[in-house]
Image (cartoon, rainbow, N blue to C red):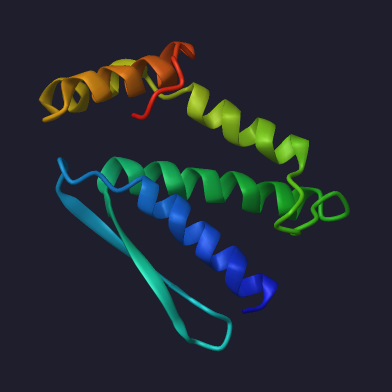
Length: 127
C-alpha cells in the first residue's frame, strides 16, 4: 500500500468518526484510490457532512491562496491550516450537541465525551 492509499484510509477513518447512528443518514462519501480501487465509504448525517465540507473548503482555500506554503504531506500538518480548521470548529455551538448527549443509550459516556469536547475535562477513561 502506497502513501496515498494510507492517506486515503486515514481520511476515511476520520470521516467514519463523524457518523452518528442516532441521526438520519444524508450523505455517503466513497473513497477510492487514484487508480479507482475501492477503499471504503462513510455515511454521514447532514450536520457532519456540512462540517466536513467546510473543513475541506478551508484547506482548499489555503492551498489555492498560499500554494508555496501548502505541503500536502500526510505526516506534516501546516500550522496555519490547523488554525483555520480549529477556527471553523470553534464557531460550532456546543449546545447543538446536547440533544445527542441526552438521547444516547450510554448517558455516562456521552456526558464524558461532551465534557471533553466542550471544556477539555476528561479523566482519561474510555468514552
